[in-house]
Amino acid sequence: MLPVTFFAIRVKTFMINFLFPLLGYLFGSLPFSIWVTRFVKNVDVRDAGSGHATTTNTIRQAGFGWGALVLILDIAKGFFPVYLAVRFSGETWVVALTAAFAVVGHCWPLFAQFRGGMGLATAGGGILAVAPLAFLVCLGLLILLTLTMRHSARASVVAGILFAPVLWLLNFRGDILWLTFGAGLVIAFRFLIDWNRKYRELWLDREKKAAE
Image 1 (cartoon, rainbow, N blue to C red):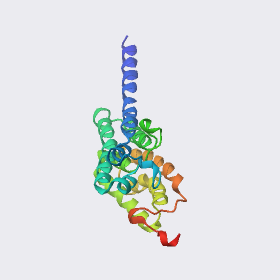
Image 2: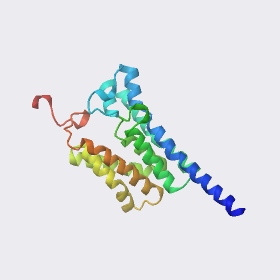
Image 3: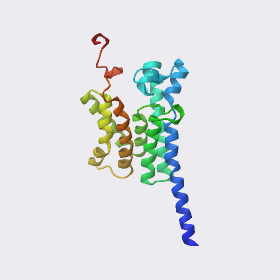
Image 4: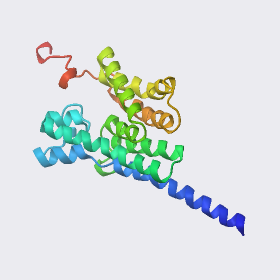
């Protein structure tokens, strides 16, 4: 009887653990940039600019203040499910999958025809929930690569691949390594669609209309 009870408890725990990645995907699927621009301007943020549901597109269409709000909300929807996974599960694979699925939800949201954003802010929220210092390291790496490569999509692809190795070199271990590995791969894959894009947005404006 005891082995059967033990097995039943293990199965129940395993099933409960899978609820956290599902929660991550549902949180990630909340399309705040789409909702905000529809509320403020009655437009779909994906109909202009990069065609993605991002903070930069929100700033372009609704203004900096609304864009800042979207950024905070996008970070929060990565932070909370990962925080809950850390708090109530503690399993490394659960934490990592929850963060990765939150990013997947942001990029391919259930509540917005699977056309979402790029996942950086949501990934940042997940990293922040586990290791704030790692968040600063990853942010610094992304900024450094963007300034060096002068192409935010390509910089994001490289950053997504390098997050985990760089943190490992800086002696980070445990949950944060697997989290950044999983979320970073999703980000790298997502940004590949913009690999050849010529940017004309906000501070990374490299092409002027006069040059067209």
